[in-house]
Length: 186
Length: 127
Image (cartoon, rainbow over all chains, first blue to last red; front, top):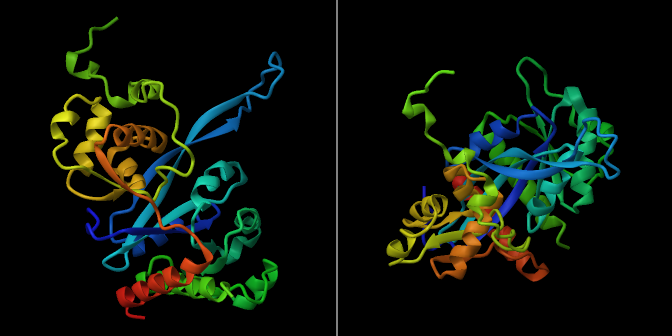
């Protein structure tokens, strides 16, 4: 449960994607601890009818976010945060993206259009990313070139298959991301 | 109106308004007590911890045995992250905890850091 007392450096990677794309499963497959949740507060514009008020009413709501942990050496620990990709969670991204190494964007090849708002956020926050195309039961592997084209990705952006239920496959996607992060250092 | 048995009237922490737990204190600066900041209790602070609020004591008990991230403290105690950050800031002011900030991002340090992350992943997953 506790970190080795010698662990002096902590880093984080965001695992992002639209609703039900497999973020929680990914983290569960690879984390060394049982995935945990944090409750985060965000403010939202109230949608109720409130004609009397002249300013847009804001209310506070909480979002549960899953995360996991990987100890990588005697002194280094990596945290993985499953970050919801809807625009209304933007406030959460501000804290989470600060200091993040990069983002792994999980996509469902059958619902590629739902990944556009996610990619928008990743780019707004200046995160370097790789794409993991999740495998779903009974579907053939989707051609990666088609994903790249449909999502308008640059040639440099890595696009890999990723079975979020499988530890090795999840690990390979992370390794792809980290190699890409190194290649963008220049 | 029915009289409920006493046992069912027990209040849980969820019913205590969050501003009461936080004692009206504001959130620390954004870059303090982040998700990946590591914290642990200093030794010899258990006496001082006895005078803390139940929520702060729960945090102290949890981190008495070793380092955890702020996110893990929130996860294990089931206290909202904002509350945990406020409580930790107060505990640090009171000299009850040690704090290790996340690795900073910086052009020169990044290559070394990313290399360490990559090596760690390869070792761990045999790639």
